[in-house]
Amino acid sequence: MVFGEPEVTTAGKISRKGTIRLVYITGDVPIVGLTAKEAEAFISKQYYEHRIYRKAHVLLKITKYSAKEVMVTGKFAQTGPFVFPPEVEAMDILEVITRNGGFAEAAKTSEVKVTRVVHDKNGSNKKEVYTVDVKARMEGDVESKPFMIYPGDTLFVREKLI
Image (tube, rainbow, N blue to C red; front, side, top):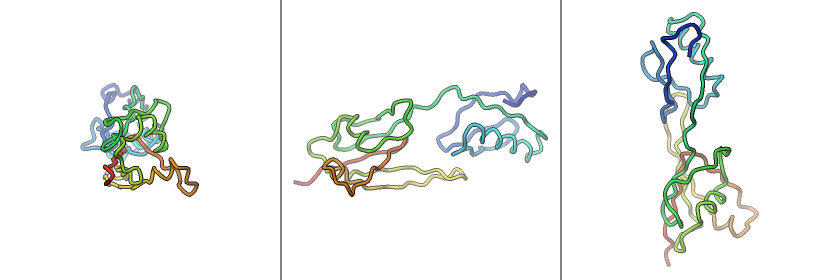
C-alpha cells in the first residue's frame, strides 16, 4: 500500500523465489531476506528509482504466513511433509526426526541427507546438500554438533545394506 495512492493498494503473494510484483513496475522485485520494514523501504526506493513517485510511503501488511514445512523422504517411519509449530523458525534435525516418528528399522541413520535451497539477494537459487550423522547424535557423541533444519529443507535417508 502506498499512502495517498489507492490504485497502488494491492494484495499479493511473495513468490517461492522471494519476489513480488509491484503496480507500475515491470518484472519481479526481489525482497528475499528482508524484514517487512526493510521491504517497505526497498519498495519505496524502487518507485523512486523508476521515477514513479518521489517519496512513496509504503506499508506492507502480512496477512498470512506460509506453512513452514520440510519434506521427509526415504526410510523414515513416516514420510511426507512435516509442519513446524507456528512459533518455530528452525529445529534441530534430531527433534524433527523424533517428532516425525523416527526412522524405519532399515534406515542408514549415519547418513541423513539434507537438501537446502539457498536464495541470494539477486533472487537466484542454489542447492546445497549436507550429510548428517544422526546416529552419532542419538548415541550421545559429544563431538557431534546440532544441525538445524529450516522450512523448505528436504530430509532423505536411504536403506542400510545388510
